[in-house]
Image (cartoon, rainbow, N blue to C red):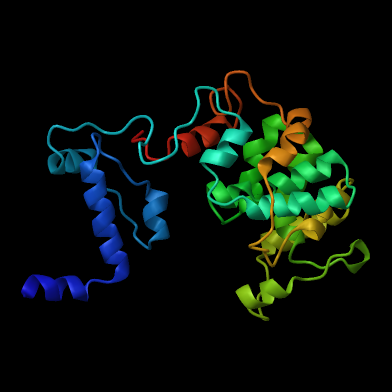
Length: 257
């Protein structure tokens, strides 16, 4: 009776943690959580290797593929990350479809397709900067810059370019929200940049109220990706680019070291 009462008293989050812990113990190797994962749950903590080994006698740390995730090919491409690691792609595909239908050039379409990849694969905070670093070695400098600064531009309307402050942002952040000073500074620098128009078109073609019934598919953009994204022959994340480690982290997110 006391056991059932205790179970009822646990929050949904605690129950989910307990289930996840149970599932991890069922695996052949020990799966760990990064500090960033714990920070997202409001915990500044990290369990040590010896502690984990003591709780899982006879097991070793997971240092490769996580069997709970879709298997990645030996030489992964951007399309493989879209299909196996990006948590949600409809927003990206809808934005790129808008740009395509509007007749924008392929650089703009690719920038729209990639503008929020950090959000769907990695982290929300400063997603423009993270996303730009992820793609820098593989895309044109104009595309890379546009992805970086769209994060700042979206908070500042430009009616001449066809962009007003999104109603969705009023709902998400409230009418009194003001961007941080570094965002304001980024916007001011971007306004006078030669590629301002490209970055602004990301905002214009962004989808701030998503259509859950939209029919979109990454296959519609295979040719554009092929012409504009430099796929490394070793596989994305297995090459020696300055951002390859970021793609490897997505490939092996629970790797111990």
